[in-house]
Image 1: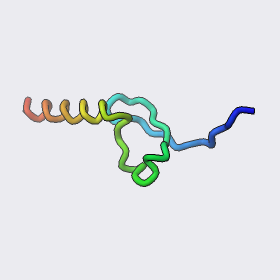
Image 2 (image 1 turned 45 degrees about the vertical axis):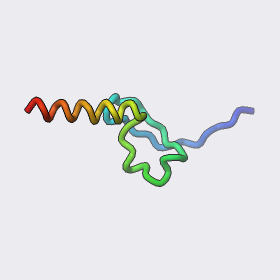
Image 3 (image 1 turned 180 degrees about the vertical axis):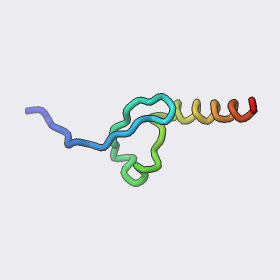
Image 4 (image 1 turned 90 degrees about the vertical axis):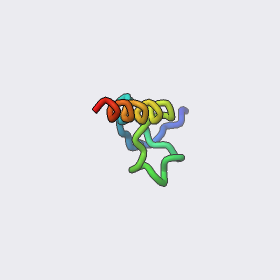
Amino acid sequence: MAHVKPILPEKDCAHCGRVMVWRKAWAKNWEDVKFCSQRCRREAKSSKASDQSRK
């Protein structure tokens, strides 16, 4: 019989919109998690900096 995971909370990545499912590593700061990966965090930071330099 297959292991059935309980229903876990989800949220969308602030950069790419991918759905993220709760992970044990994020248990302490789930409310602060905004990006699905380091790549999205880095790209969002660089795009934010380039947007500000254009103004």
